[in-house]
Image (cartoon, rainbow, N blue to C red; front, side, top):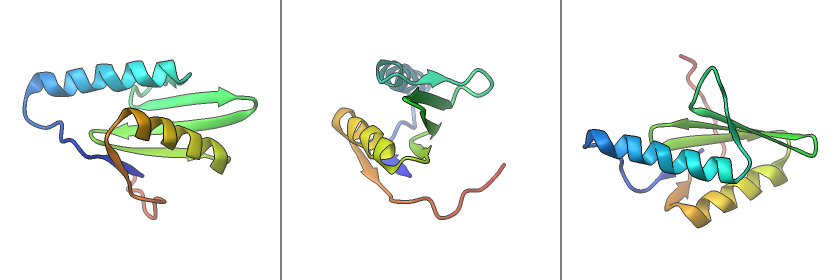
Length: 94
């Protein structure tokens, strides 16, 4: 679970700009947006699948490969100002 340090709340345009930026970045890194839920990105590389779930200014990364998770985190940390909150212990299902 990661949390971006800069808040995106406030102006209506801000969240739209944020979405464009993160979407562009994720596509550059080889992720595809899920058709049924645009907040979910999927990357399949050499048989390894990585899921990235974005919710406002938080994101979660899921994969069977810890190395792939680390690569995605590193790329995100280079591009965005964010804080790693460690492993997800509890996820509320809505």
